[in-house]
View: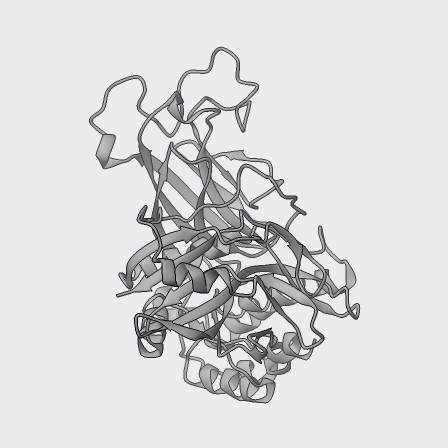
Length: 414
């Protein structure tokens, strides 16, 4: 509970930030390729109440010269025939659509372009309005622009929001989510709907993983077969599933994660407060929110890593814990981890305190970890492996359910 109050406790310090400091994360712009071969593409973009997202789609360069009727277009094909099986029955087949949660969210039409006003903590997925992948072919190039709640479109960049104003605004957004989780205020407890196992639209990575079809080495496979399937808390309550294995030295591991924009978490709450204050006065974003201690191999995690928007990580963050395995492979260290995506707050079933709630589709975070390292050009080989007695439906240590296909992603570092 105390770790959730850390950034709120240092709010007075933020107000004393230098007046000339500029916002370092006022606006984000990036491009995503959306293919007709998968139902949904995870943009990796976390959103907060008050954000605005501008989305525009165009035919990808790879098939822009394809004049055939089967080429996918942002506005879709002319409506006609039976559309009852489409994700969005009111839109043309093949049109660009979006949704704001992995499961249970109604899709909305984007077409060639649209601006979305975000009302609650969410996460952006994009797709094509198709009931079958062969209804049209190709990919769409989507430009995404995120404007945070405190962004003024007509502001003078040379007179940008002060650091103190920006951080207080971000803290206000995080506080809204926190209060929603603690006292049931707002639209929902967590900002995300409940999900059940067996959903067909589990999130995929924004960049498809280059998965090897080669068989895993028998010796490494044997070691993975004998790994614990889940981590546990200090009371021996079983929790998150072990969902990734990384082969590489500690030096290579840490360098790869840094290159992939993962931040190592603080391990002490008092130290975290001081680091948050120092980062603020140095005009830096604090990105090292502490995470709880969990156990594997009868010891606490060696490292915790996280990836999120500044301050908003209080409410929403990608994160994982990793342990050095008690074995090596071909003389190289092996690391075993459990990754989940925090999407808001809920009651801890053990003590009724407030804790983070995870996205129950945990395979999305497994794939996000692999995708981030792949995009940073730090992977030599990626492969999936299904161990015996896989975890496919379980609860974490705080009592929230999750589901998986049971596979572990094995990552060999460069």
